[in-house]
Length: 316
Length: 223
Image (cartoon, rainbow over all chains, first blue to last red):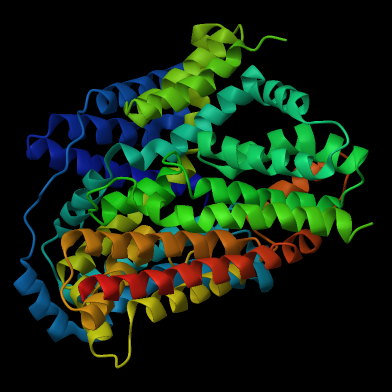
């Protein structure tokens, strides 16, 4: 059975290669950072929790001291790229499409045909594993077709990962922060505070506080998934559903979407907001968030109204 | 009640406002929160290490970078631009509105892995949007080009967020179902996912309108 461990070996190998190339390039900070991440992927399952914790602290120390820099491995010039593009034409899109198609078609096949009964993949992990298989297929296909020097994909990948830098592991780090918050009971405290500020008997204001809490806590945690259990158990279920008799399906579904509006507004949601700014080489790190504010804020207000109308006015 | 663990949230907000490195901010917040809640420092470091290790799957997706980088070396972005340049009547507004609809519908059908920033926005959508804007409005300065590219990234996010919950077998729907079930309210994924449709329609109307207004504004600024 293929499990996540296989993917971790693949990712660990990629990070190890980037560490070696950084070292050869004299970029010590980058080399150390990617090497530690390679250790995490290759050996993390066999290390103690404390060793993994120390590894996290070391990663953060390197990033915190500004040890990660952009890199500029040798590549083709814009003129050469133009010439290649003319020569190769639309076939260039094919390898890029292989990855999502493998993930999507593979997931559908695996779930809706007897293929799923083979138990080839770890349960509920098939999409990400198929994504990894798609990456390998696209890479091998492109290498055979284009015949570049062997290390070229690694060097081009290093340019991209170095441009993303520390933001590459922020989402994973935020998930770890969420676990510590849960351990410390932060959700219960926030729920208590939120219940304290809501005027009793006012359904609409309770909906507003619920949706604002979803968006606000999502902005802090960078992820609506961390905010959802907190706000639902603090306000959604005890007040909106049990006290005021609201429709649970609307409160759950649209409450989550109110949180997604918060995701559009926060640099903590690094993979959606900061990583693209780095990948697109934008001067302003928050440029993507700036373009999202005008959609996120009115859409949040719409979500408040949908909850109020759908869960209360139409429901009763 | 002990309110001190909330200091972690204050550290996150302050650390960001003061522009410290976000990784540093997040880990400081985690350590402070754990210790203020009365846990032993070593226990907090262990919890952090375990959670980081358990969530490695989140960072696995970077393995796609060598594929994208290699194709870019052979002119993927240039090819994407010339496809748009060869299209009659292509404007940045039409292109991004079409991409928004495509991304929402694909996500609603469970195909959220089509699209995304490293795979689609950097090599394809952003260069196409930029080429279309230049084609209709003439040469643009660097700030305007950055705005177009940022709008392409924003459109990818919005299309994903307000499409994916219509598909019932997605992580966020399963999370909602799980939380409500644990509280004694069994809901089916389908009951939940139909309620993602109104917001999806509003998201398309609001963001689509903003894209077209942005394209119009670019044209005015160019004259």
